[in-house]
Every structure is written in structure tokens, then in C-alpha cells.
Amino acid sequence: MMTVYRIDPLLDSRWPAFLQRHPHSSVFHTPEWLAALRKTYGYSPVAFTTSTQGEELKNGIVSCCISSWLTGRRMVSLPFSDHCQPLVDHPEELRLLTSCLKEHMDREKWKYIELRPVVSSDWGLEKQASYVRNEKFYFHRLDLRPDLDDLFRSFHKSCVQRKIRRAERERLAYEAGRSEAILSKFYHLLLLTRRRHQLPPQPVAWFRNLVDCLGDRLTIRVLSKGDQPVASILTLSYKTTVVYKYGCSDARFHNLGGMPLLFWRAIQAAKQCGSQEFDLGRSEVNNPGLSAFKEHLGATRSELSYFRLTEHGLDGHPRHHQMQAIRRVLGGMPDSMAQLAGQVLYRHMG
Image (tube, rainbow, N blue to C red; front, top):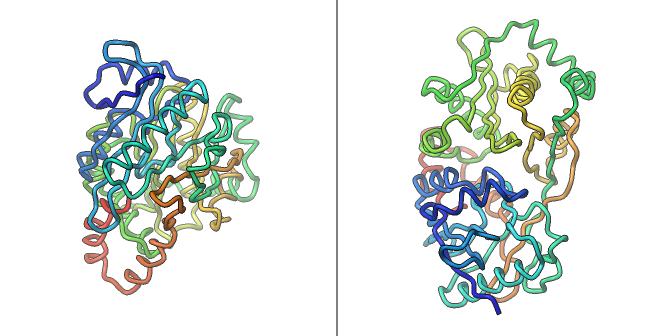
């Protein structure tokens, strides 16, 4: 019987090298992403592995411990991350690591454990009776290996190609980087978008910490009409993958085609850097418009399932129930109060 060890992925020098070797690692596994989570929300990252101290890491599941008086004490792999694949090579490794998580849950009185694998069936997670599918999303990925002309031709002609050409005719000003000025434009658009969706905005400290921790792995792209920002996206890069994480816009200028042009600019830049895949992230199953937009870019859709292990074997309360309650509260709230609500609530929502 192998022993499972608990390590700190922010301090253990073996962790970054292990991520470089493992084919299923992502930007969400990295110490930089974990450091931003800790700096912003106070979460404590931890990884579980069967590799002994001083031995090269062979496997690992990384999680964050969330201690909240509002939503309970729990272990999530990983909060505010679209996915976080357990980094194992054999079903037996996964069984050992998840069994260890269960022992820690019982001993430390966690409310639940949540895993967010990209692939759940290959290693038998769906066959572990104690883990129950809690939420399902659509997950989109775009193959960047074709040349740029072929990628452009794969876009939907009216929904993407025509809008890109419209945006180019409008001569929208384009910026890319991570300066405070660019971040300010992005956050202005984020506030508009979250207000439109009746959701609290993420605290601006989260984005500043992402910029500080990820450095040149993070890029904010903004399009403006004159002095007015109209659309923006934030992407992350790791190894040969670019990840779309946040997008926001001013609805008054949607007809200008800013968002399709931003994705085209991101794709062009990714190709220049040798990236082979564009991870377009998760989409709510009940948001067909977002899924359709990603598919109009030529992305392939798959299913993404989150799994929970709870003390009583129940699936707990999915996030969409929490979001419905928050929308009711935020409906008539002024922007300043919504921002304050985001600063207070997000650390409890991971």
C-alpha cells in the first residue's frame, strides 16, 4: 500500500518541473495561479502525491482549502478555475489520492470535496460511487495547428468573418498588454458586463494579483472607439495552450464586431508564439448563445463535469442556485454597492 504525502505546491521546488513534464497540466495548476488565489482570497493551496520527499514527483492532485463562515469549510480543485485535471497516469493512483482526500475530509470536517477534471471517465472517477456529478458544463477547444488562412475560413461567415471585417472597417483602436491603464479599461467593461448579467464583479485586486503573479503569461486585449473602450478579453498562456478566461463589453457597441476581432487578434498572436490549442473555457449548458459563439469560431465542444464527495453522499447545492439568489439581491443595487458585494462574497464562492 503506497503512502500519500501532502505538499505545498508554492514551496515545493519539484512542482513546476512536474507540471512541465505532465501532458495534462494547465495554467491552473501553476504556482503563479495558486499564488494569485492565495493573495486575493486567502485560500491555502495543497497538493497530494504518492511521491516521497526527495523523489521526483510522479503524480498529484492540487486543491485549495476554503474556510468560510458563509458557505462552509471545503476542499476545491480548484476555485475560480474552469478545470483542474488530476495529474495521474493510472487509475490506481487516482483511487489512492481520492481516498486520501476522503480521510482528510473526515478528519478535518470539510463540508465537501470538489474535483473539476477535464477527463473523468478514463481514470474511473465516474465509477467511484462516493463521487457524484454535481454540475455539467460545455467545454470548447480550438485546434490552432492549421495555418491562419484555414482558421479564418473555418469561422462562421456571417457571425464571425463578417463581424471581423466590420470591426476592421471601423478602425477600432487595439491595445494588448497588462499595464494599469489597460487593466482599468478592462475592468470598466467588466463592471458593465457583470451589471448586465446581474452578478457581482470580481474584486479588482484579483486581476491586479493575476497580473503580478502571472506576468507575461497574461494578456489583456482592448478595442476602443475613440476614447471609449468597447470590448476586452483576458487570456492566459502555458506551454502550447492559450486560455480564454474573461471577456467583457459595452453593449451599446456590440454591432461593431469588437469581440470577434479580439479573438482573431488573440489567435494570430497565439500562432506567432507557436501555441497549438486555444482553450475557450467552460460555458453554462443553459447559455446556448455563448456555446454557439465559440462553435462559430470553429471550436470543438465536449462535456465538462464537476464531481463532489460530501459527508452524506449527497451532491450539495450547485453554484447556479447560489447565483440565482445573488441575482435577486443585486437586481436593484447601485454599482458601488455591487462592487463592495463582490469584494465580500467572492472569497466565499470559490
